[in-house]
Structure formats: structure tokens, C-alpha cells
Length: 192
Ligand code: AP5
Image 1 (cartoon, rainbow, N blue to C red):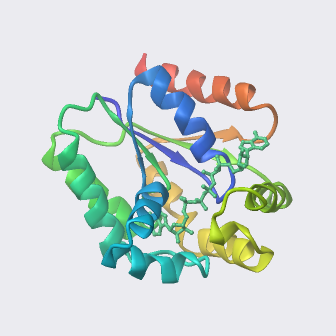
Image 2 (cartoon, rainbow, N blue to C red; image 1 turned 180 degrees about the horizontal axis):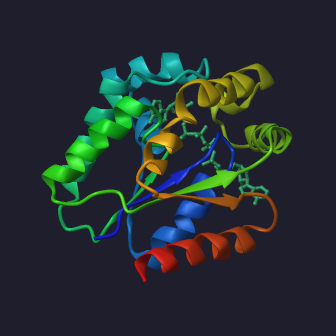
């Protein structure tokens, strides 16, 4: 089993690169953003609660996302490995993920962190907001709140995995294919 975290601020290309990585390495893609948007679309109580936070660019409470990931792990017992996208986003989530994976006798093998400048993030998200229908992409204030939330609560999650020498940084700007190649290089090095 090979478990990967794709890490980076909003708009850094996690979703874009995840699609390519799961196809190449046959990983199960677990994106908490996508799971939350499905709950919102289905108008579940969890979705309605989460929407209040997401529309303001704030993180959804830890217990909500940890519960969702736990359910998703149980529902994919046969997976050859997982790609976590947008999770963990706090140290509490990282600790909870470690415990959940330990129960399955596995762990995180690698965190790949995409580095992208703030100007580029804002321009990508405003651009996507023209067509995505995502309420958190449509105005710059919310986009800046998402980035601020990342610096305040999420960026330190890389320090958590760095203690175990599991973090590799990759430049997240430039052609999508070049970034994909750089990510694959790091995975192949780790897999040996
Ligand atoms: P989530 O859905 O995870 O969104 P995000 O982290 O804000 O990331 P995005 O999906 O906006 O960006 P991305 O890095 O995936 O980039 P993408 O490939 O799409 O979270 C949304 C909300 O849900 C959070 O704010 C929070 O409220 C809640 N949430 C989710 N997980 C949570 C958790 N664990 N705990 C608590 N709350 C949680 O690319 C962006 C754009 O750039 C696209 O248009 C793409 O085409 C373009 N692009 C990609 N690569 C390139 C490139 N190389 N060059 C030019 N353009 C590019």
C-alpha cells in the first residue's frame, strides 16, 4: 500500500494533479473538498453545516472532516493506496489520520507540497470562479480568507510530517505536465 498527501494552498493545483496521479499510481482519490461539495449538493445536514464555513473561506470543524475520511477509508478496504487531497488541514486532522491508518496497519509514506506564489493562486481562483460555480471562488475577499486560513492553520501540517522526513516540495507553477513529471519523480524515488 502507498499513501500520499498532496499538499498546498488553495489553487495550487492539488485537484488537477490528483487526477493524473491516481490514474498512474492506481490510488483512491480522497478529496475532503469534493466530499463536502457532494454533501452540499445532496443537501444533507452535514452539507448544510459545512456550507456556512466554506462560503466564508473558513475551515470546516475537524470532527466533521475526520468522520468523513474515516467513513471513506472503511468504504474502500480494497484500495491499493490513497491520495489525500485537501486533508489533513490541521494538526488534529493529521494526528487523527495517523491513528486511522494505524488501525489499518499502514501509514502516510509521502507528502508532496506544491509551492505557488500568492498572486498566481488568486489569479487562478478568480479565473476558475468565472465558470466553476463554486461560491468560494467568486470573490477575492473569500479567496484571500481561504489563503489566510491556510497560513494560520494548515501550513504547519507540513512541519508535522517533516519531523518524519516525509515532505518533498515541488514547484507548482509552469506547465501542468512538467509539474506532474516532478511529482512522479519524487514518488518513484520514494517507492524505489
Ligand atoms: P478544497 O476543495 O480542498 O479547495 P482548496 O484547497 O481551496 O483547493 P482548490 O480546489 O481551490 O485548489 P487546488 O489546489 O485543488 O487546485 P486546482 O487543481 O483546483 O476546499 C474547499 C473548502 O472546503 C475549504 O475552504 C474548507 O472550507 C473546506 N475543506 C476542505 N477540506 C477541509 C479539511 N480537511 N478541513 C476543513 N475544511 C475543509 O487548480 C486551481 C485552478 O488552477 C484550476 O482552474 C486549474 O485549472 C488551474 N491550474 C492548475 N494547475 C495549473 C497550472 N500549472 N498553471 C495554470 N493553472 C493551473
